Image 1 (spheres, rainbow, N blue to C red):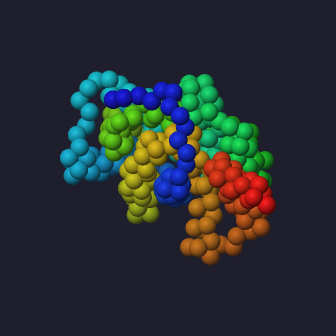
Image 2 (cartoon, rainbow, N blue to C red):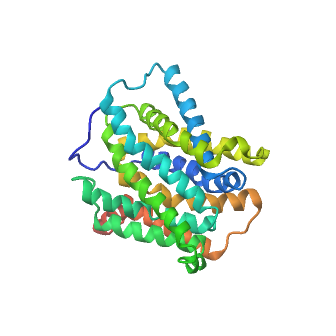
Image 3 (cartoon, helix red, strand yellow):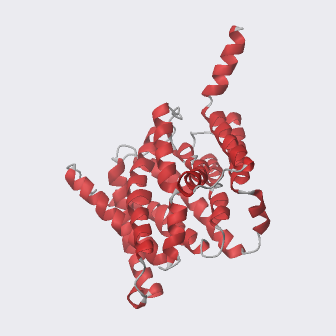
Length: 311
């Protein structure tokens, strides 16, 4: 295993934006399907099933491509914080929170992840520094998330403090995990994803057995089963392949921008699949998110400046 220290921050290419767009879809739908799953299956057990299923899928991908799991103790030790902060704690905390707070408020709290990422980057690393343009873009993007989902949800902050704190804890963990994932430069993304999921299984298995006693639970409906399948295949296995690929390409704080785009998919899919009408605040919020991402990317602003200079 090699580590990343002091490297210059890579620029975000159109390919990188495409990868982040795909990741935002896989993670964006997870809010809806998680809400369906935890209505019938306890949060810890949902997390365990999701993780062990994804670990098996990715392990089969590794076998099919001739890759092998690491054999050195140092790499497996490095997987421990990644497992805790990328899977065990945030999945369980967010699932439990979704039992008590609206999914929209959960999405708003989850959109604080890039801010935690900026904070951890400044405190723990010497590269990937935040610029003024990126900070302004973060603020605009977060404002767009709030406007699109509904500012009225902010009035509920403080009503169920424990659940909201759990959602914020999940966002904080995801940010720390992204920083931790930078350590695995030179390790194939599928290997990193599989390794941290396998460790997560060993951590969550006893918790699920002791806390939830899943053998005593009634059989879930097909809706809950299919929700867990989607969470396993798309929101975990495929999502983590993209997640660690993007970190290796453009860094930790950039990949966290996906949390801004996730609510956009929930609203858009609702309009396309359920016939829901997009309200003016939702359209304004979408524009805010896009403007924020454009400010973070920097290229549109540079193109406008170059145009004025030529004229």
